[in-house]
Figure 1 (cartoon, rainbow, N blue to C red):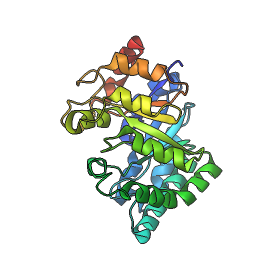
Figure 2: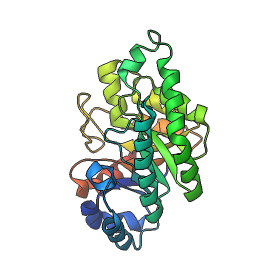
Figure 3: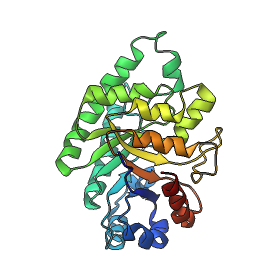
Figure 4: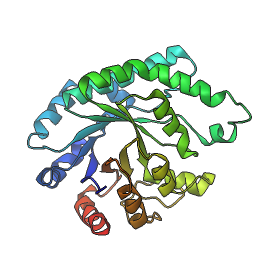
Length: 269
C-alpha cells in the first residue's frame, strides 16, 4: 500500500516555524509537550488552549505522545497500575481537547524478559494480564473519544512480544507503534532482528511509526539519513503492508530541516 503522508513530532516551541509546511500538505502532527510528569500532573489548560489557537488551519491528523516516565503498564502492583491509568486518562483528556486521534504509550518489555522467558515461564503471561487490566478502562475511554493507543517499542528485543499483547487484548483502539531507532538499537546491542523484521512482525496491527535515525549505540533521534539505518528497504517494507500506519518523524534537533528531510524520504519512497 502507498505510504501515508509524512508528518512530524512537535513541541509548542517547534510548531510555529513548521506550521505552514505542515498545513499546506495536511501533514500529521504528534504533540509531545505532555510526556513530562511535571506537566501532566498539573493544570494543562493554558497549554491546551494555546495549542488550540495555534492549530487553527491545521487539517491533518493529530496525535499526542502520552506520558511515559516511570509508567510501567504491566507493573504487578495494582495500586501502581492505578496511577498509570490516571496518567493515561489525563493524556486522553488532553487528546480529546486537541482533536487528537492517537496517543503513543510505551511497551514494558525489555531484553531481560526476552532472556528469561523460559527461565521464568510465567513472566510474560503475568505481564500480559497486568497490562490488559491496566488498559481496560483506558481503552474503553479511548474508544468513546475516537483515539487509538499506539504501543511503542522501547527496549523490546523480540518484535513479536508486544504484537502478541495487542492481538490478545484485541481492541480496535489499540495498535502497534514502531520506533525505527529503538528497533535498530535492539538489533545492534541485543541481537534483535533488524528494523524491517519489526515491521513484518507487526503486519496487520501496525498503526504508527516513529521515523528517526541512530548510530546503533544510543537513542539519537537524528534525521533519517544521518545514521546507519537503510531507509529505502525500510520504506519498501512499510509499503508491503496492507495497513497504512501514521508516519511521524521524531527528531531531537534541527526541526527546521524537516521539510528537506521529508523531501529526501519522499524521493526514496
